[in-house]
Length: 216
Image 1: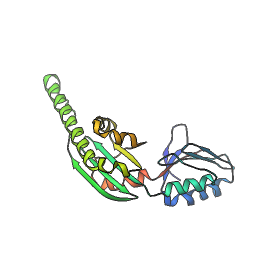
Image 2: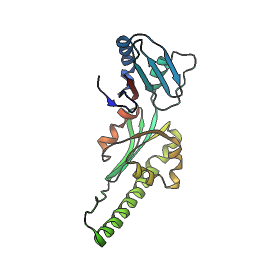
Image 3: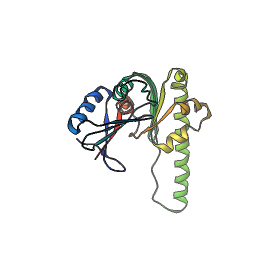
Image 4: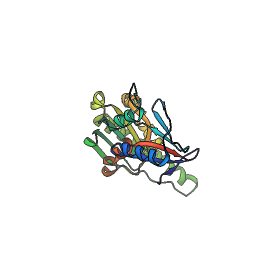
């Protein structure tokens, strides 16, 4: 099984909620029965052969209660949530609201910011000032769209997912009116290309997935 290398060893895999129960059963079949540990937002499955699967629940907290931890994780992951998404890069921005996996309202726009100038001296300084101005205008435009698309829905949202470029998102969220979105933002950040509509529409594949670090 493939996956991205993980810091500290092992590899990361992202499992859609609909496949999670089957994936966990397959892990148990391959590695044998072992114990299951529970922490806030994390269920760690230990195989009988020493293999470990650290399952990071999307949209914590994960409430276990008296249930089996793996059953609780699967149920939690499968919940349909109302999620706001804000993606900003120097090439554009996108804001949308999802009901489950359905995009119910959105706004996407492009606003290119010129790349770096290799020339030196005054030309480079003028170019840098122009680039900074374009980046500021993009952040202001993205903030205006977030205010128009996401803020009216904020009372209905379970969470907000941010993505794109961190510096661009941080600049966008400096707008004081967007404080309610900052409070709802989940920790996970989606690194995506320029936010076209197809990129926005595909974000549920990432923000609904259960991220699992498998080791060894």
